[in-house]
Image 1: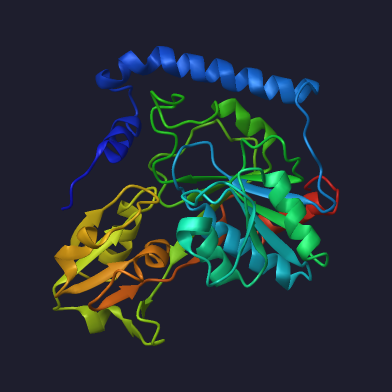
Image 2: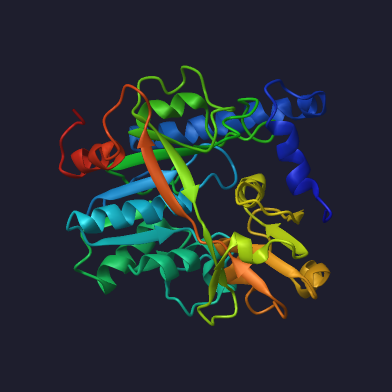
Length: 351
């Protein structure tokens, strides 16, 4: 197992049902964080800080917790479903992990160090315009100026970016849920749970072990599974294989995502045995990070692949995944999430 730094040890304390003793000294900072976040929301609500409306509707796919929860696969799912309905979507993102925070168009050949790993993955997988920038309003305007045929924008993250007005908001939680339910830095929350009152749907990525009881009861709720069966060679040779081809080999698996256990569990479900190497979310890989796999098979997520491609010298495979969305019991059929969003885009409250 590779070294685990503080970026991974702290979430290990956050995602316990009870507040860990080690986090008690952080409670005053958590209270201060909540106060400042509340004041900021109020300033936007009363108009002291101004929000800006783009000329097309905006759907925000975000989370209340720090770190990855599965937003990127959900954005890809939503973009495809909107295209099937005749919409012409574009994507904006902050470009976390990129340099400078300026507005940039993202294409398949962009450098991840400039635009960020997730936007590069979105550009390669979606085939729609992708723009990044710390100022999501500026990114949206630049996208629309360059692609005037775009008629809806999907924002990858941006739940707390109140400068940008939004038509619909979807919150994603992974199987870790809200952990201890505390705000940063004593817990994983970027906003209090009452913020759910302003969103349109909640998507749960993974098992139900960490789900919030009652906090989102009034909202449409959906389950998301990430499904992948075949591996693709990172070499660019377009070769692919199934898990049986890799069995009985010495395998290393890396994952620099919000919860690396999600990827490792997928590999285990495919019947693979491997040595797991978790890294922090958005980890900037170096040659030294991958030295252990020089003579063995290396498996990774698509998000890791956009950063590791120039570093890999041996046999390496990527597991592409697709999001599968289903309604929870007592709610509409599988298209329920799309229907909820389409109702908002057409200016009608969900039925």
